[in-house]
Length: 496
Image (cartoon, rainbow, N blue to C red; front, side):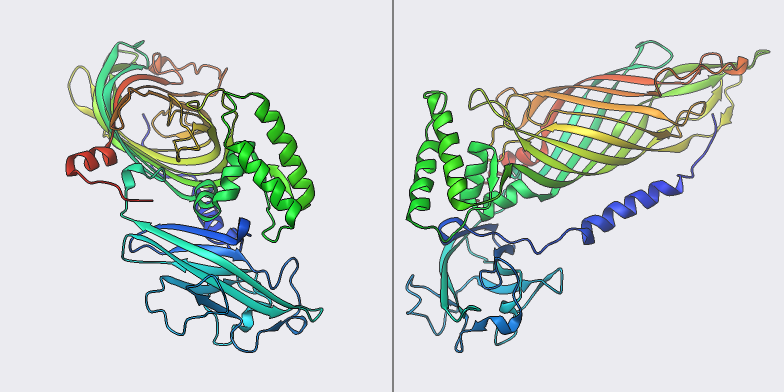
């Protein structure tokens, strides 16, 4: 078995490119026009939560600064009464602050004293932060004169809610412990078996579905119910208000009890879309996720005979360390459900991975001497992944197989000296819920094999190590460590 520690250079380039794209490539000046001028911001105590309001002054298209005239007094101000004619001179407990984004800079900035940036900014950034649990409501008013000389006033109701952090119920953070028994097929045909203990971590640092739910609940509910993501217009005439109420009324009806409601809702939604003249499209949400896994597992050892052929044989398994990390980018897709407890969302991602495994030393079976020292074998793979999305709230159901995934790809592994590249990699997990939020059972299958139909290597010195492959079948006991910690500590969630 060869000792090779150097990773191909393009693997590092690939990962650095993905990190750079995630940091700089996305346009952060993406605003929302809230339905009925109502803005909801959800956060936890001590954590700032931003909301990007599509700037009504520079929309529907950016205008030159001289075409729009701001109010001479204060074009942008907060007040505690719904009537903008009753502003407050001092509000020390106001948990909201303001900023803007674009067009010259792809980042959020603070306003100058005269708010001159309002004439061209793409979005108005509302930041909510408080150290106290509960909710707060303020009203935000903008005043300007448009390019035709007509005075304009727009008022928004802004409500911020903050609760204690509850990571156990937060779908963005998952820490699972897996322990169980694994059967390994290498050259010994599933004769090797061993116990293993793994910890798997997952964090979703960008999730458009969660962002829409927290910042524009009306559009989120509409998307979940109809599967359509529409740009709703906040300034609606009477007919649009009527159609919107009709859609909301039909959306509240259980389609399982009244099947005809689905057809009526589709027709009403189409009428609303036509009245709005909006851009409606299939509901798809961007996601960026980080995956990590580490722990103790079994690794096959190689023994070398001292006979005339010096042939190798595969020995029993020895305990070894394994770990991997991956960065995933893709889309969350909403799907139709036959009943309310069915899975209603899947994610499809592209996931590059880097991993490592400790490889035991090669031992001479006759003398017991070390022939090849043990070493750390690196591997990488480029994978496609489909995952059963976890439950987000009462609108999005996870079904009986929450967290199940199937991932397949190709890559390189230094663990197999006779066929390092290309190798087929597969990883599939099927957890089965038993009605507990702390533990569940799971079945896992992992395959690391040469590409399909790869020709055998004829080498008399390694008769039994021909294009070595591994198939692992595991029966696991799955613990949610965050939920377990919450149960032991007795912490109660107050997150809204």
